Image 1 (cartoon, rainbow, N blue to C red):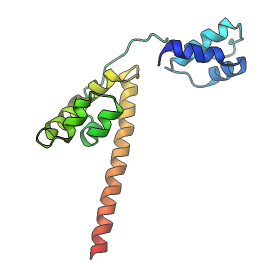
Image 2 (tube, helix red, strand yellow; image 1 turned 60 degrees about the vertical axis):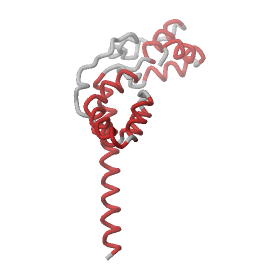
Image 3 (tube, rainbow, N blue to C red; image 1 turned 180 degrees about the vertical axis):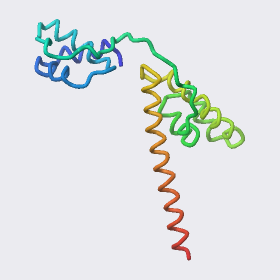
Image 4 (cartoon, rainbow, N blue to C red; image 1 turned 90 degrees about the vertical axis):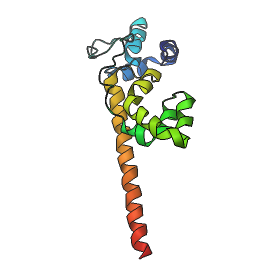
Length: 157
């Protein structure tokens, strides 16, 4: 998110809200250094809070670990490309029958890199955690589909 936007929102919060925000888990969240800055500007007492785990707002993006295969990009390509705001050409190519097989395999191999460049997530490890959630939903969806197929097969007998 834009730090100017966040600063404007924090200025509007009351002192109690700022202190309550600082008591929450704040590892690698860009809001918290800004909240500390605002609390200090207001001369609020933050001495009792553990602020050692905070990451600065201008932390560089890390791209280590994006080389892994992306199953969600392979099986859910049209939806996945829209969610990650990739160029519309990827979404359109997913529906064109002669080329879609190549496109989905390309997205499976290179989708992490393409989506990470468009996302607001600061490091690759956090991005890959989000991709793991996509895979969990994919597994649940496939499981439900298979279960429905088995049930419909037995109902036909």
